[in-house]
Every structure is written in structure tokens, then in C-alpha cells.
Length: 181
Image (cartoon, rainbow, N blue to C red; front, side, top):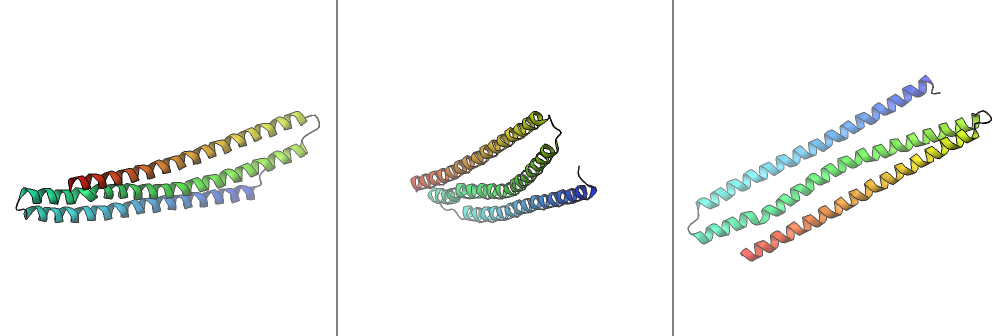
């Protein structure tokens, strides 16, 4: 049985964790807002500059040149923006994952200790029930570890795919720009 002090301590720790996660979530949102503001400012400035360039066009070849100059880096910028968004969300998500893993480890330790205490204090004749409880707990722990490994592997594969897609998009843009030039 948990004492009132242990319950209060656990509740305080959980509240502190929740406030910490909330703070991390807001930090992530702030970073996304800052990124969007910077991207918007850059887009506005580039659009104004492009519009001014278009107003000074004297022939069709110059029009094509100006258009190519504008669209060539656009894919790279869009890819970079997407990468920044991905990095921010991944960083924020990793904080949540780290905290969840810590809490799961704490819970596993607590449950393990409880099972050990229960098995030591179990009445005679309940050995098979205690063994079944330990076996069920062990199976659950193993399943949880397998799920965590699968999630980490999926995240690694997603990261690799994003890097490959980014690289491919940038190279495709460069190739297309060279063909136009």
C-alpha cells in the first residue's frame, strides 16, 4: 500500500512532468511561429524584388531568365523549410518520447518491486500464482520493449527517407535549372 506521502510525492512529480512537457510543447510552437514569420518575410521580400525585376523587362529572353532565376532556388527553399519544420517537430516529439520512456521505466521498476514484495509476503501455497504473475509481467515488459524498438526503427527509417527525398529534390532542381540555362 502506498502511504499518503508517497501519493502526494507521486502527484507532485507527475504535475512537474506535465508542466515540463507543456513548456516543451510551447517551445516547439514558438519555433514554428518564428520559422513561419521568417519564411513569410523572406517570401514577401523576394516577391517584391521579383515584381520589380519583371517591371524592367525589355525582351522575352530576359523574362525567361528572370523567371528561371526565381523558380530555381524555390524548390531548395521549400525543401529547407520542410526540413526545418521536421527538425522542430522531431525535437519536440523526442522530448515527449524521452519523458514517456523515463516514466515507463519508473513504472516498471515500481511494479517489479511490488511483485517482489508481494512474492516474498505471499502466503504458502500461492507460489504458482506468484510465478504466473511474474511471467505475465515479464511477457508484458518484453512486449513493451519490442514495441519501443519498432517505433525507434520506424523513426530512423522515416528520417532516412526524408533525407533521401530532400537530397533527391535538391538535385532534381539543380538538374532542371542547368537544363534551362
